[in-house]
Image (cartoon, rainbow over all chains, first blue to last red; front, side, top):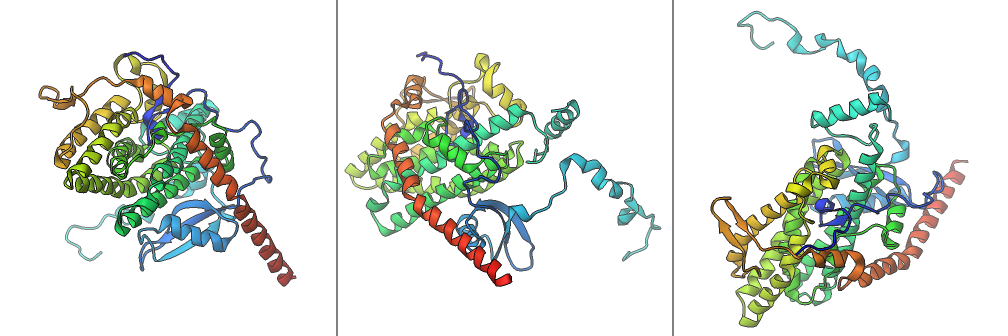
Length: 128
Length: 318
């Protein structure tokens, strides 16, 4: 059986074949920044058990922090993945830029004497 | 994109490192990911419908609680994926517009109806089983946020597949009528499940087109045909354990290949369903749009409340 070819399709869409041709990736007039219809974005951090730090697990939209916390519980801890949750407005995060990666992290690159393995220790010396 | 940026991007791929949201990336890579992650997310939320349809009619409280948990998981999977897509500079509301207007698609498997309770078993066992085979390699996708979302999704999917298997096992070992119901569901879902992997893309077909580019970018790790074969090989022994047969007279073990041979797939049907001529295309989309519109007042009320609260805090601070 050789059906009419129908553009390109792929199974890569997880739940099965979806078209890859003729599918737009944005609307004709994408909303301008500041004119977003979406609620603000929050980043979600979960402490999986006592004694561990909170770890970033994902993000979600919510109208305010209280709703963000409730939704984060439903989305990210449905299987007891955590004992504590943080939600942080994504807009409040200041990040280093990947463009200046080399220059920004450079000062640490030539200071290998900050690691214990830098030092020569005589054979047989223990607890050091 | 400068030559320098392109070299950095290629170096990440060559080292099998992950590309992260703020890295420079070719526009084609970004668009391919937006398209794929968005349509994956759409599939998750549309996929709630064939199963949600049976929540009120689940045969016991246990089955009802399980089914509700599963449908809730699908909503969660949609959210992880929309969040991953948003890291590529699109808005979730834009993607929903594209779904609602039919310009972006979802997996055609959800355009088939769930006619009996046994269909819920067959969807879990076969449809989620095929999805797992597709999704596990995506956990190693070159784009970090997508790969991380898939790790969460895959952990949760395995419960989905097992609950489906259990439903079919119970029916298959029940009364003759129940056994027949299970067999009928498997008969209807087997071929559409094989089509979930997409058309053949090995041999001649692999040279051009989407698969080759996606593989070069580390988005796709295996061809549609490899994944389909993997699914068949793991499913046939499970069918035997269920006491059900798979509706393919050409299905047999091939000693030489160490795999099962299977019959030719009639992709005409898949293309018809994707074009919009499947049994439930209109219904699924209409239901999705209605749910979105019916929920508008809730979204507006929540936003208005948040605004009012924020105003109060400011007044208090003044």
